[in-house]
Image 1 (cartoon, one colour):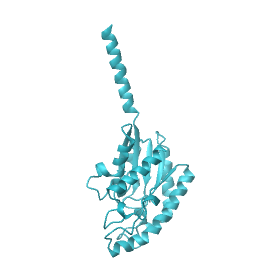
Image 2 (cartoon, helix red, strand yellow; image 1 turned 30 degrees about the vertical axis):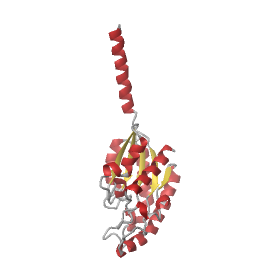
Image 3 (cartoon, helix red, strand yellow; image 1 turned 45 degrees about the vertical axis):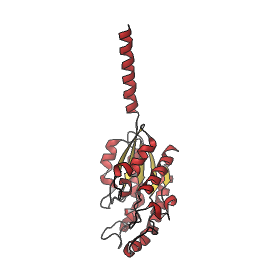
Image 4 (cartoon, helix red, strand yellow; image 1 turned 90 degrees about the vertical axis):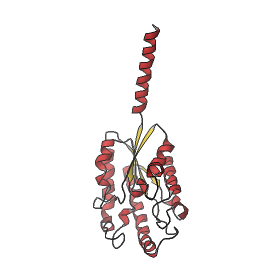
Length: 230
C-alpha cells in the first residue's frame, strides 16, 4: 500500500511540475538594435530583454527579437516584418514593441538609407502589425513603446553625429505621436521609454547618443517591467 501511495504522489508531483513548465508566460520583445542590446559587451545578460527576464522571474520566458537597424515601415531594410514568422511561431502571451528610431533615417541622414521617405506609411504598417499579432492563437497582450530618446548632450559626439541627431530627434517625436494614436485606436497599452530618459546623457553610450549604456538598458527594463506588471 505504501508503495502504491508513493507512486501516486510521485505521479502527481510530475504532473504538477509539467504543468508549471507549461504555464510560463512567453514574452516577445520586438525591436531594433536597442532591443537587441547594441554597444554592450554581453547583450545576453545586459540587454533590456535579459534584464526584464530577471525582473519578471522564472514564471516568464522572455525572447529577444531585436535586430540591428530594424524598421517598423515595411519598405525599410531590414524591417521587423522579416521577424514576423519567428514571432508567430513563438505564439507569445505578451508582445512588447519598440520601433521607430531607424524609421527616422533618410533624406540625407544615415547614409543612403531610405525610411523617412515613407513616413506616411508608418501608421498603416503599425496598425497592420498589431492586427496580425492580435489574431495569434495566444491572443497576446500587446504593449507599444515610445522609443528611447536621442540625447544630443551625450559626451564626445562628433559634429556630423550631432547634426544627424538634431534632424532626426523631431522626427522621432512625430512618430511617437503616431504610436500613441495606434495604442488608443487598438485599445492596447503604451509605455513611454522616451520622456524618462531624455536629456540624461549618463544613460547613453559616449560618442553615440542613441544606444543606451548598461545603466540605460536597466532603466528600459524597469519601465517595461512596470508596464507589464501594471
